[in-house]
Image (tube, rainbow over all chains, first blue to last red; front, top):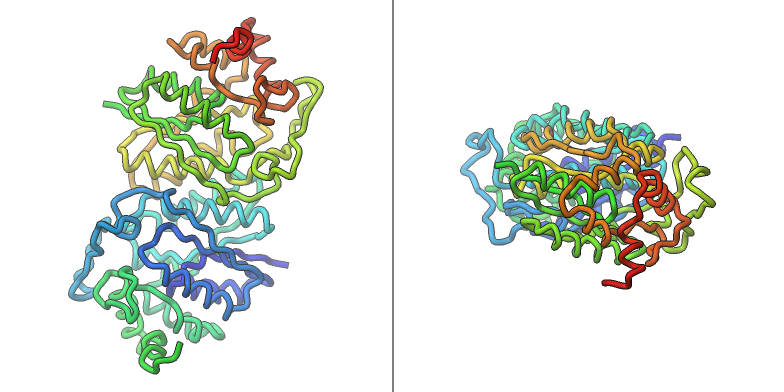
Length: 229
Length: 229
């Protein structure tokens, strides 16, 4: 009996991860962390997607005030950067970096995985698309897996199915996962928290380019165009 | 200019660490984490000690609901184990273990150290006395230091001056640190949150044995005997 815990933000990548975990594990639990995001709409997306995926449990943990920094994702006085196209995205650290964010997410996941006796934690990070964020790289995940095993005296794997995939490859993976495409139509990506998505923030541009390169329409935009809820 | 962040619980060990950090660093910040402890008295001790130590800043972060488990330190329906003497303390994992507790503390410290540009984080863990807790061992700290440096793309050292010291050695260290002894008279250790301390929980027994073996009266008990506040 395999049991997985999935960090589900409600975005495209974690939604795809959730369906990978469903395919690979006998039982799947979802954990959503609300860290004072600009937009509660992402939490709503996670709730909807966890229900669609029929997970064994879904918990939302609120961690406002835990993380500090100057990111516009936690500080509403800051502006999210916008860009003309995905081709001009910077390579370095962006102002959306929240120091130790993924450490916090994985630490809370480690606690819950220990209590629920899960053997793996799924996280939807990709060093292809988010290499500018150091905590989206494999070397960080390796170090965290070691931190977890030494902290807990128990081996819990950190699984990052998208770590070496770009958005196009993630879209193609989602096409192959049963029911994932429909769930993606409820996923939320926009850093500005807009519906329909703003189309100009880093996250929107990467998402749009991924679907375009894979040759599919974004199911979120299709659903919004149809006006269904 | 060296800048240290000290995880200050208000207990004996973190208080001693604070004074080690004061000796070694130009500027010292204190961070206290309230994780739904049974006893707010420990937070009060931290506030008093941080003020006595004249730290550059002291922040208390509340993280209730973040950690789960069956520890009586977070679950008030559980009983703290008591013992006849320090000689019969178990070697294995005790029921006071909170899974990923020190991971969470160090993760929040990593976030704050990044923002405040600290070069080191001090933590008062000891694998001599708390070897039953896996997250009090050097191998865990090494893994966490790697997790932090990969998550942040910045090297922040984790300093654990007490890691190889037993309580007697910690008492002797405290004797040599200016003003530390007086601060210790305000430190709180008892797992049951009692003042005067219960004298029968794991933490009380280790503390009492340390002072006895070092040949000094516990300044906390001396202060309480005198009835000063």
